[in-house]
Length: 413
Ligand code: NIG
Ligand code: FE
Image (cartoon, rainbow, N blue to C red):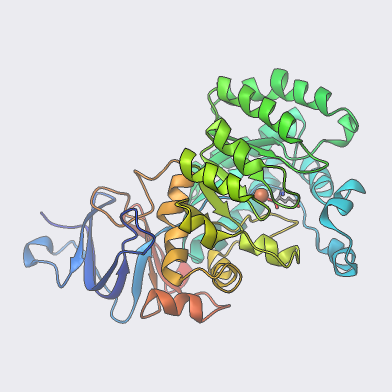
């Protein structure tokens, strides 16, 4: 069978296939693509029967190919930015204190409410372009900077339209439970009832989000409140995610396991029992080391302990205007390596197949295996270790999405 596209002479191919933590490296190999899907990946050279005059051949001599990166945790759609909070941060005012003062998330809520859908999309497109140029081909996008009905729907509709209009695939999450909006200050129950009666049924009926996420945190939603929100979400058919044990240990990992969440995210303060529970319940841990860095917490999620306990560990950007304003998973690789002490192969796996598990997309993307989407990144690096080791720059040379070249010579085509 002729291939539509073949990458030849790749120095390393990180297939990321299989359940072991390593990246399944093939040395000196090729990848054949047909009809937007992976046809074959192997060492050596493709047989001549695979190539005809219409086959696009890309020579990857000296380069490394990975699956398209999957960013399993972002707050993509929002208005404004928060660089004005930097002096407060540098003075040591804690994150939850800034939020209590009406800043933080609530300041982004005001900016998001004040923006039109078109303005939000324009800003999000800039981010999606950056993501794509840095190798991300699938991204999760949470709402949660609107909180009221109109703005939450506006943000989710923006993400839904962008999924069609932009090459990056977007998986949507409703996160009304991100903060208590000012109009419900002191009335968390009232806000929960509003979500249950007005927002969640509408989002579910109109298929505006596949997942629901809750910020289970001291001063935001308690574990008891988070449990009720998750139960309600389950009844409406949402899959579950949770911002768990980010700052204060609240047994969020245990709650995620009890509720059968697809992922639990952050987990800096997760307990040993919580880690055990996640392994048993097969909840994917989404670690966000860029957020640890940016909040200056001096502490990272215990990714090594999680891996040793048998938890599947993914790594994401947490791209958002407050605690991790970066679109680049390559930047996050540095923090995963030097902060969480993961190996480059574990990191690549955490940003591909393990991240796909966190989005329930493990059958479609995340590894270079026959039949999966041909989402591929060619890095100008001789091996996976080099990508992580040589930090702070963009190593992406070419990105292929659904079998088509979308980034070439580091530029979007
Ligand atoms: O994942 N922790 C809660 N939510 C975001 C931050 C949101 C913000 O500060 O704007 C997070 O870190
Ligand atoms: Fe987050």
